[in-house]
Image (cartoon, rainbow, N blue to C red; front, side):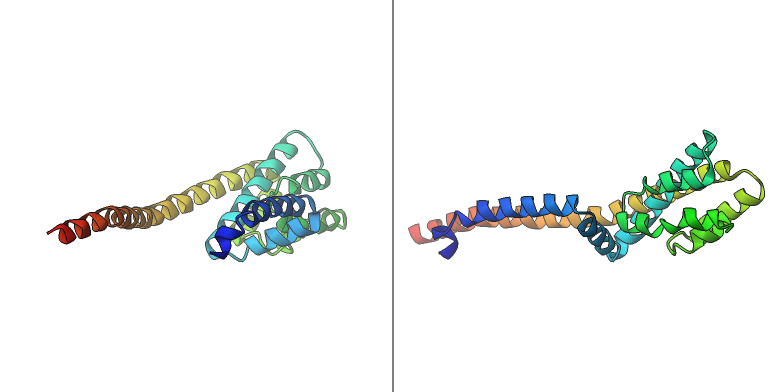
Length: 187
């Protein structure tokens, strides 16, 4: 009853939420907090991290293949990571490389690159084929992401079918029960 009398609250509340979301997206600090919060979701975390590794590796591979220096390429490639929290954790990597640290060691300090990725980067450094190994890392990571998404979709599909069935059954009951009651009353 309260909601019917004060129906104007809903459009105002929806508009306020849209404005709040827009302002949060434009504020770098709030965006970083939101991205950090997204990493706490169990299923999403692995997908977000692997997607970041894939995008970073692919971009860095292209930049190194084009002849950019490793320090400049790492700084540019870290901007390709859509999760601002993870991108922020990569900020010290170029400084570590400038200070003489191995690229794989600097990446290991970010604490989100998986061991396999660090091993591939280490192999690429030692064999002087970093660009090729980064491309290979991006391909492998994208395949893993696709496998995880396929598994997730195959797990969610039956749940969606069951929920749709329950919803349709509820709608049918809502339509037919009054008709059955009218028939019983008429007898």
